[in-house]
Length: 203
Image (cartoon, rainbow, N blue to C red; front, top):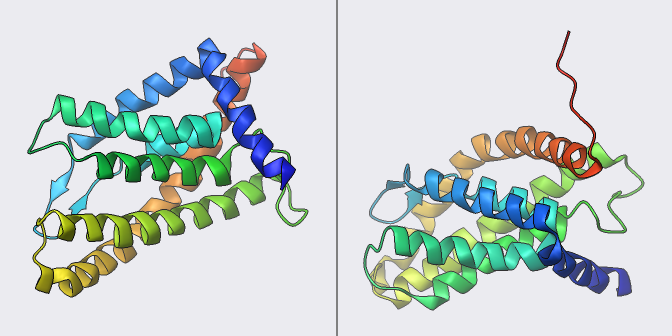
């Protein structure tokens, strides 16, 4: 338990690291670009902005991930003020970053899961993190907020859940392979940058 809470303190120290802040800002910007390609449907939308949040959480931890998630929502609304600003959505976006940071932070003490090597452990954590994101954020929190603010009629809650369930189940087929491909590459590149080593070009 002590190790778990120390992870948040370690993540908070990333705010004092210029390289970590630079990487976080860069991926927040990437998230904004991805948001521009969002496909909107009556009861749900499709976008892959979570990829940038997952990378931030993995590299900088849950504390930075939480703040970055909220900043993505705020900056996204400022850039595209479509309707009113709802702080509850900002909080939920922060929780999304918290999920990825808690499960994927590469500096946590117990990174190896069940004695597995780091790569396999990261893959398992990635799958768990995405499933939690889909269930807690997409299916429960966002659907409830959409209904609370009147974006979904009260009688449409069941239909919204069903539509989101089908949509997210189909998206997982692409989401998880993308995460499994992008996260290890991002982690390797980040470690190389942080260590000051140059990446050799292939012969």
